[in-house]
Length: 549
Ligand code: TEU
Image (tube, rainbow, N blue to C red; front, side, top):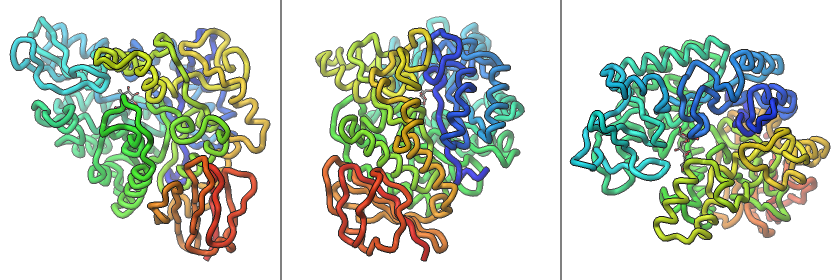
């Protein structure tokens, strides 16, 4: 399957569908919803980790790469899911977490018992003095990134939670073990892999960072391309049908030219996050600032044009299990909920790159709206709430920050219907259901021709029907316009215009050409008035126009 024409749907199984009434989503639940996914029209489902795990980071803390956590089901359930998906022309992409393992992993347990072979699977270092860790690097989840082990009088590195110990990729035995894991899942018929924070696996110098939080010493590190090429050649590179995507944390575009190069030596494509930090202050996410729309456009356009010039491929997305819901973030939860959700979908699905849809995005699901600390489950949110309060931020202000930035915003149960637990489960879910499921749910949208669901279905079909979307060049239009994002795609004799108003106010836009000769393929409003050169765009209006030259 040509990944340039494909669309990937991300499933966070814990919150997707609970088949056995324990309040926790599972693999059988996913199988039960395959017809829904087929109707939407997606080609791949990316499943976030369901391997054996203590779930301190919802499965991104893997204890055993070869077995399925019983909370999610069994290997038979997985095989049934693969078969059911294959029967509907859908392929499975697995999420591989190889930067770190859970500290409950057998390798780490052996390391702790003093076995030198396994100690070298991880990164243990002496402190700089009594009580002083080897470096001042900060964990992504708050606090210092080293944990002291008294027995060795040494520290181990954990860039994420203290129970997620970083693997030592400089050790060839570690790399060989990782290859074994990938081959195991390839043999099960898996046709896609997402590699979690994979650009952090090659650590550079272990030095204090007096300019930042340490990331410059381990991001896109010295041997990263070598490690990816080696993994590719030894595993997925032997099967031309397999697609791969690397999650690239704080990466540089220059590195992504290589990670996602058309030559196929490393990965098929990359997730980068710079466009999702335009409501941060630098790298600081735990603040409230307005979204910088000009910066957002500039970043998206830079990545679009430069990746293309350098023959590299992007994954394009707004949402995942770590990001707040985009309709809450950049659209409107109120009056223009539907129009803004459709507009945002349009912008992504007409870009050059493989689009990713995160469960519930196709329904316009919104942020969680939690206002009590016990509603939050995510380790990152809980840690940062404490850190904010310790820094003197009033609790009420800390809540406001969490409401906007918490990863739990995207982790509330999938809204299947208007019933008590949104059709997700018969029992109380592990995380609260958004009360707006009575209004925003799949059942209602499947019956409504004008729904966000049906609009996403249309966007997915457009990519298959018009080669210009998959293969065309992209040219930004009127890039500095205060409220509009617009671009032109061209391929052979095909030309496509995407025009989107990001704000709740009508605005004027100069197309620079007469729009008379274009056919309208899609738009966030049912009708359109886009004719002539000078046009008016309604609140959150987006349109896709097409012509053959
Ligand atoms: O996330 C990597 C990561 O650094 C960010 O997404 C991070 O969670 C957030 O931006 C910090 O503000 C990946 C997974 O997607 C995430 O769920 C895991 O928690 C993390 O790796 C560790 O495995």
